Length: 219
Length: 219
DNA sequence: TAGATTGTTAATCGATTAACAATC
DNA sequence: TAGATTGTTAATCGATTAACAATC
Image (tube, rainbow over all chains, first blue to last red):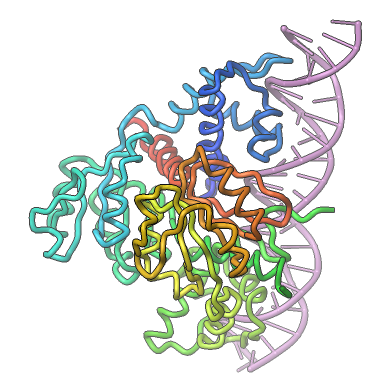
């Protein structure tokens, strides 16, 4: 029996995608001074099933809910943040400092999620001549392996064009990357044990477009 | 019986997300002069099951595959592009011209998917004083309803902070938007018939982080 | 107490995968 | 012909939802 690609030891990928929405809602409650919350209330706020909410909470937290009251908001927030790793830093490198890559480099919000982009790489010498974007330096591609191995980086972000994505992916895997955030619109082949999280604009647009076509075809 | 949120008349959301990957691979084949391709070959290239590939093709295309040969690459490309609506333009407006919003406005690649960002809106007057980003103007929020209704815009892109996302969403729905691409990290409540496609950095990072934790916890 | 809520076990539902006859 | 492949029907698998006893 093999573990599905969709499952990460017990908790499904779908559930993982939901977790930040729980946390966001819990923080909204906290900000407005609410101390406890019930599964049915969370379910209503997030358009989910209340049993699913309880199961998700049970995966992430050891908080026991009190009948008639629900769960302690502060404790839930603590457990969700711990589960999501927001308290300990994950270092990442980024390959491909084009428009998208530089946008990500500039983005300050990753720190809140425990992600730290330590460096970027690009094969274009124009970008690598000692220029800084945010706090990170853009290095030439030749430095990739050395830096990843020395700093024991385990997360790689791919922002290169589709045609070089697989080659970059292979290099990342070879130098110790264990999880890849892939913004190139291509399927990457990786060995067992390496995770690829795809971020594909075209996929999202496919969902939007199909909805418009199917629900409003004869305008 | 009600249709699941996950299904868009017959084709599942999961399948829709796969379609651009098929199309990308088919174009790679085309570029290298390959004329026909079999389901098992596609399946291998995209790490999918070959039966799933056949079913996805059957949804999108009326091409009949020939035993021992497979499918005609050119015909498949044509049908996939038609299904995904790449040949007819969908107009969209964007709300929230911050860093992310402006990155999207600048992005030239949407045209290839049949998406055209016609205008952006922001409540910050500093951004709306006749400045152009790309070809689109940034308008003050008051112009939102009029422009959407006059131009019959059906796609709205939300790039505002989480705290104002729901309010913006409500305004978009009220002025005829039928599909929302939501980059705010919040769950939006919408009426039946309105689709929300969420793009949440935190959700993706949750998947990466859980993988690292579960597969490599004791480094 | 009554009623809302929890937590768990069982049922359902839908997507994926296997099995297999038909075809070139 | 033999063998790879198609296309469809049946089986499996996993996620979601329903049912229900326990609890405050």
